[in-house]
Amino acid sequence: MLRFVAHRLVQGVLTLWVIASLAFALMRLAPGGPFDKEKPLPPAVAANLKRTFGLAADLGSPVAGVVVACPTQAGASVAAGATLCTVRALDGAPVVLRADRPMTIVAVIGEAGRRVQVGEAVIVRETSAWEQYVASVGSWLRLDLGVTYASEGERTVMEVLGKAFPVSLELGLLALALALTLGLSAGLVAGLHRNTWIDHGLMVLALAAVSLSSLVLAPLLLALFGVTLQWLPWGGWEAGRWDWSHARIKVLPVVTLGLVYAAYFARLARAGLLDVLSQDFIRTARAKGLSEWRVVTVHASRGALLPVVSFLGPALAGIVTGSVVIERVFAVPGVGEYFVNAAVNRDYPLVIGTVVLYSSLLIVCNLSVDVAYAALDPRVRVHND
Image 1: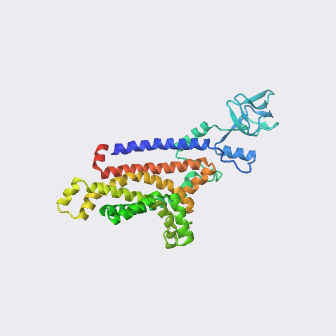
Image 2: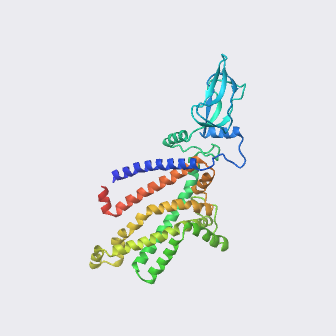
Image 3: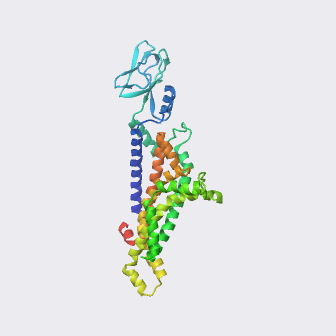
């Protein structure tokens, strides 16, 4: 089992690297940039911002002297070998700074007549996607996700996620607890009353919930219970606060997120229980005179939970990704709110940090599900060993 867990952890690290790399590539391929505004920023301001966040780099003077001319302009794309700037050295000989590769000029700060030292910046160029990727990978290896563009470098991604993640975690855990409680209870009751009105009624409700989604349920429940009837408030969620007035705020988001998955759990628990109750060892237990309650709780329950445990991985993925929508609808200040805003504003570090956070959570949860499945099914445990 330890070898299995170690192998899965190595796979998880590689998976995170691939996911972060794909997120990096997709954000760069998307149209627009982090500093594109309705009113363009002054070139000098845009250049400073790009230099601050590693999206641009300085090209320094090759010698100490006086700038003669820099024929390039901000925004221009130049070919390799093109003249960028000419500097007259102190001994009187002109020295030309040329582009060593195709590049885009962000700003020209080498004005004619300006005195410069060796290496002093005269041109600011955009860094290539590969240069940015290499720098990002180095930061990831140091467990540094960078700073957010929206805060102009004053807040790190870890600080933002550290503030928002407890809210999303509380929402997800409450929704999962609700889904498991309702789903397992309804599924086991339906299985024990097979082909009765109880079974049919519970499965009809489960089918109706499965047919819906959080995208449909969220506005419906908000409009009905929050706006029309005004039974439940929304907005103002605070993690860890459980007084009566605040607990009511958490009802609608938790119910909306957990209800659909409760229906899935109910159908799986019913199917698992019916399958186990038809096995030979259950007939043997009944033949020994054991009560039906003991047969179900002691002998059938573990086998009935196997389909539910198998679905925990996809359910956790759905709850995690679905919480983004729920947080937007019910104004929950979780990670989803920051993720959506970061994607719209092209805040590259925050988007990648959020993706890595969600991916890490899913990898750990899926590993935990595999371990739990092995604990419930001895055949899996023997195969892993």
